[in-house]
Amino acid sequence: MKNVRRLIYILSILFTICIIYNLCISDKVKEQFSKEINVFNDQDLLQNLEIKPHNVFNTIKNPSGGKVLVQYSNDSAIDDTYYKFSTNVKPNSNYKLSSWISTVDNWDGKDKLFNIKMYDKGSKIHALSSNGSVKKTVDIGGINWDYIEYNFKIPDNFRNIIDIFLGYKPKNTKGKRYISGLKLKEFITDIIDF
Image 1 (cartoon, rainbow, N blue to C red):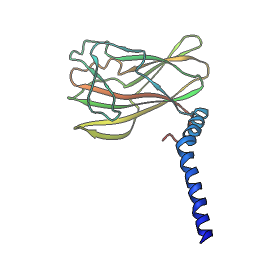
Image 2 (cartoon, rainbow, N blue to C red):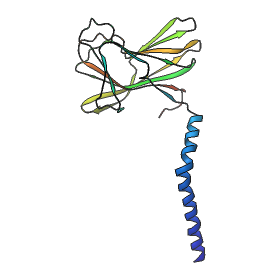
Image 3 (cartoon, one colour):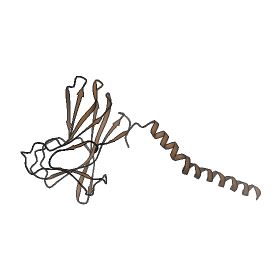
Image 4 (cartoon, rainbow, N blue to C red):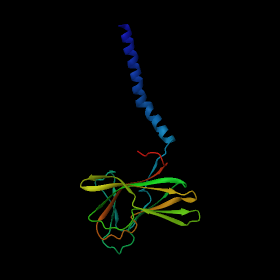
């Protein structure tokens, strides 16, 4: 009976140590570990955002839970409808631009969603333009949202800043485009991003 009591006592001490470790020490170790090997670096792209006419922020239900950028126009002659922001990047690095997108009310815009302007060391402009790839689709409140990703690389001999335009001059006459959860992420190819 004494041995059983000792065994229970030792197991309860070990159990207590495990609980204390998980509550107090484990988070600090995880935090330090994630800081040391932060391969995936998200940037909040809503800072330094330049908004041209017919673009507003709105609050509707969406997959990212935050505010939604809304693009719209009622006049196809208006040529300056876009979101623009500039951000620092590392040359010779791969990036992933991602966002939730939805179009409503028969959106008829004719533009590419992601437009990137890069500059080489001689300040010559190099442009990329894509609608990205749809990775998944969800329905929230009767609105279909597509999660879109676009991967690109900043060449080695380029400057460390890019301009990103969202929906550059769509020339739409009806409808709206919602953009939510916009992120730019540096990533290493061949590593799975969860």
